Amino acid sequence: MACGDKIKKRCVVTPSSCVQYELELPEFSELTDCVTIEETTEELYKFVGEIKNLLDFTDLEGCEGLTLPTTKTALNLFQYLIDRDCAQKELIATMQTTIATMQEQITDLENSNCP
Image (cartoon, rainbow, N blue to C red):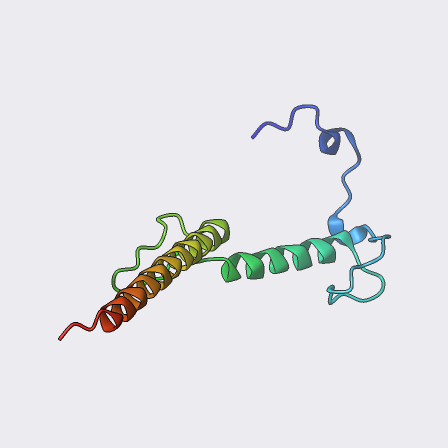
């Protein structure tokens, strides 16, 4: 990878362990006072790795008759669940209508005095 004329090639190189981090640390940081850029970078990589592992759905399997999305990202899985929820609500509404129609037919048959 060619660095060309990037700033890091034009400036005096200072190891990250020698550069103090001067901004306020977020509440979730486990670091304390006198923090270096090296420490903040290490902590960020650690957090990103943990988050990445939590969002790894590659081994997620469905049950019989349930086909999960091929690309198992959080967004795809949430969209899949939302779509399934909407489809189930539509099926429930259809079943409720069918039950109501059947109940009306039963009442009509009972009122028609059939033997």
